[in-house]
Image (cartoon, rainbow, N blue to C red; front, top):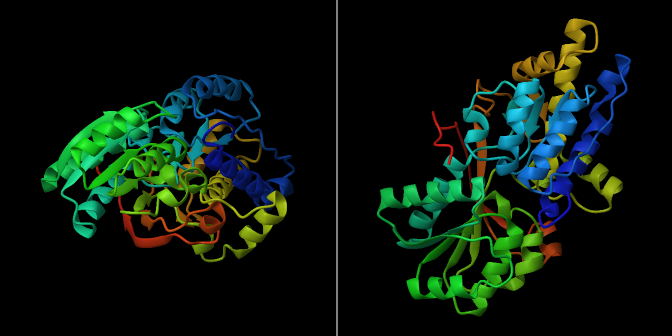
Length: 365
């Protein structure tokens, strides 16, 4: 909720907060007081796991919304699994999140072993790209999705002319020199907008004219706040996403109006997922409380969540045995916006959308 990724994390928290306000009446009717206890992992595994210890130690916490980053959620969820505490992620996409088969771990979005190949298919078929330079931020999710992109490219005989990991955030001149020498048709970046946008802007300024590609980590208006017109210039930019803008969901008008009233701005993309993840938590607690006739245990809540078919803002949501959606939506978005205002006003274009079942297994990269 703070730091470089707050453009995604804060809207998730605000969506969850609004969800509690709007969807908590059932538990209140049963006589329970319901509160939100926010913890800020700052997209950092060490902080996330320290938070997990504090969360587990509070017996009044019966369900969690989070985490966004797979690299934080995977180690933190080992602790939640041991404690029997259910968490519903609005954005963690690495396959390992769910392929461990933990009852306590569910997500309401798709996976990187679909996103990476989808980005490659768009590059190869729609853009006609025959060479790609692949970059990742060295995180669990960033490296994983980059490897899924590379695997799909190998299958299509698309040349991977570079595969580099970087934690740089300010001066990408060395990496850009390597990119320009490779003369790639597209650049695929597995990472988050606050790092990637700096690289994209510098690469354009250095003369790169190909297309930039990425995944859901770019789905925030902060991307253009940093990258500006450089993103849509020359070869343009597109990204795959596991979510759609809030205004694309049927019946979202009331949510958008309430969000704007509560927080003073339009909801960023992942706010709707925060709202629905909170709705699932509340519905699971209520179902378990009703069945038991008392304050439920954490395990009873986790079991109840897996049994739900929940009609939420973003669709009808239920989980398979691993905690994945049986069919998850995916989108390919072309970036037309050059400012945050244009982004929030809907200037970007969804060029493809589809639903796919999770792969039968994930490599857990």
